[in-house]
Structure formats: structure tokens, C-alpha cells
Image: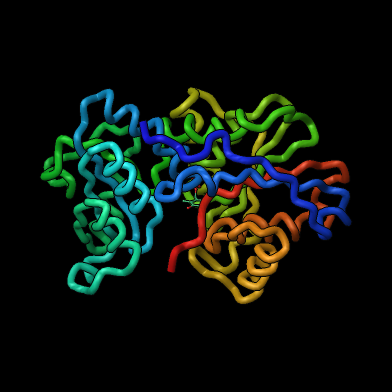
Length: 307
Ligand SMILES: *Cc1c(COP(=O)(O)O)cnc(C)c1O
């Protein structure tokens, strides 16, 4: 068990003019406070996978990520805390000989072994990690030489991860018709879990942080629902209008929105996901997308980067 630092995480009211003017309530679910090294949704999604790894007698975790992947750092830290080995397959063969950036250095410092793949190798490899935890490796899969190991998909979203994220709404009392529980969407695992964990009447809203995800992300959420629960859910949707230009892109206006929100409410706002979520909700509220009386709960899924 990877011990949480704070669970259940705090639920705080957030009085903000933009929302108040629209007659909409905003609350923040402070999952960023869950664990300093395995924050927010990374902890929620990893916890059941780690329990399964230990139960199945695995001694090594293997996963995938880009040069600044929070998931990679989280897996490295979680494995170290549990005394497991970890291997990270990193997108970008050219990174192998360069000085490590802060993110990869943190993963290595936690004990993760890094292996660098070309973009084509990476695409091929991540496409083959089906997320069931079982290695579907054929003889030439790039993780073959690390077996036996538990393979976690890129971003960490598999059926178990979804059940982990489903514990978020379980910590929100009295959800009903007027409630919309909101989170950013990278791979969709967190949104899938939140939707699955809601009581009847309440709905989930995801805000895509990448461009061009229409259709693909919805299909991913539905696939994860089938994998985790053997059925689909109809209580969620994804907003595709607030990605700010694409994954990792942070337009100037978004950065100043985040800085102002942080100042007003004293909550550190992570830029790649959380800022896009909060800015989207403010915009949607201002343009009348939510009927008056709606209560929004924004899940603060992570922490700002240390650098
Ligand atoms: C990884 C991450 C996400 C993405 O979650 P998915 O389950 O992949 O959709 C959201 N917010 C933060 C802060 C993250 O680090």
C-alpha cells in the first residue's frame, strides 16, 4: 500500500465572481494534496495497480512516458516507496545522450531505469501495452528483456486505474441532479472513474487538454468503462473547446488566468491540466452553459511542476 498523505482530500468552497454572476457554485476537490511525489489522479490511478502488482508477486513495474511525464515520475516514486524496481520507456531516442531534464532526473533519482525509444518504436510499444497489466508482448516487444514485470500503459489508465479514480466521487457527499464533477482529460482514465463513481442524477464533465481529441477520447472513456465495469455510462461528456492550442501549450492568457486564480484563492494551479480545466469552467459559466443553481466540483488533479 502506498500510504496517502491526506485522504479523503479536502473539499473547499470557492467563491469566485465569474461563477457567482452565473448563479453557479464552485467547489475544489484538493486531490493535489494527496501525496507530494505521487499527486492527485496519479495516486488514485496507481493505488489499485500497485496493490495488484504486490498481490501478484511482481517485483518490477514498467511503463511509458514523454520527457516531462508526470506519470513516469509518479511510477518511479511509487515503486521506490514499495520496494519495487521500475523501468521507464521514454519517447525520444535523441534524449539518451543529452543531459537529463529535471523530470527524468527525478525519475532516475527515485531508482527508475530509463530506456529511450525512437518515436516510431514508442508508438508501436505503447500501442501494444493493452493496459490489462498482462504483458501482451510478442518476441520483439521492447520490454521483453525486462520481464517478468507489470506493464502499465502510457498515462497509467487501465481498468484498475478507473476503479481508483472512482473513489473521488465517493468522497463527495450529497451529490445529485444539480452536480457536475469536473476534471481535465489527458487519457480519459480519471474522467471514466469519476463518471462511474457518481450516484444517479449527477454528471461528469471532462475538459480535453489536447487538440483533435474529438471522438478518440470519447471512445477511450467508453473502452475503459467496458474494461472496468463491463458496460458504458451516459452521465459524462468532454469539452473540446479549451485545450489552449494543444497538449503542453499554455497561451499567455491561460498563464495569467492561472496566476490570478492562484492569487485570489491561494491554490497552486498546475498549468498543463488544472489551469485548462478551471479556465474552461469559468468560460462555460460566463457564457451560460450551466443553468443557475448548478454546483460544479473541480477536481484539482495535480501539482504545478517544480521547475
Ligand atoms: C496526468 C494528469 C491528468 C490526466 O489524467 P487522465 O486520467 O490521463 O485523463 C490530469 N491532471 C493532471 C494534473 C495530471 O498530471
